Image 1: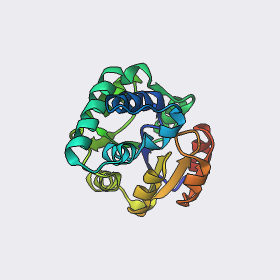
Image 2: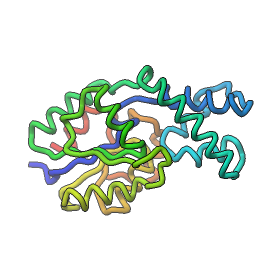
Image 3: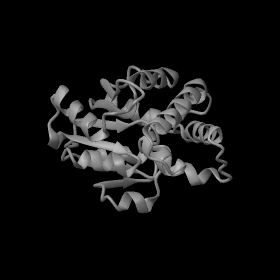
Image 4: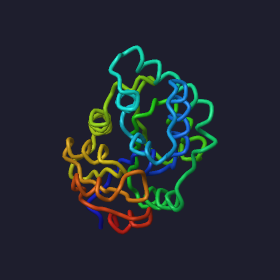
Length: 216
């Protein structure tokens, strides 16, 4: 029998593959600033960090107005086209259904605005899978993942020793560790194995089905 009863999932890179939607939105935004990126892979690191952090490095500026303009351009483009390039990962649906059927409480945490999380779950038909989901109130993204995970634990009265977080980036693992949670890092998402091993997750899995082997 598994010692875990509660599972907190990250969204992008763990349940859905939205990399193309993110990259295309970044390329569009950079083009508005007369910046051309020839290799899309150079932008993969932007899949999880906050947008202002990404644009500060990409545009090489710290000006708040410029960064806010970049974020707004990105958000507008992403809002129009995200659904075209976002899909659920193979096998993750079966994993989620089995976990729920086996009595696990499932939660979702994302840096995205709550409204966009809701739209995404509707698109991939997962609105009934998760007991609750947490994200940012607006597109400003002011609440970090550490705080969002903390809110899930507090609001849903989760016991630390019975809860595990599953994510694909080091930011997910660090957010869980800051809340004393066990972690599963997935290698099928956006991060390299080197990145994930560098933050010492409790478990490392290569595909969604391996999640069942860990949790039992």
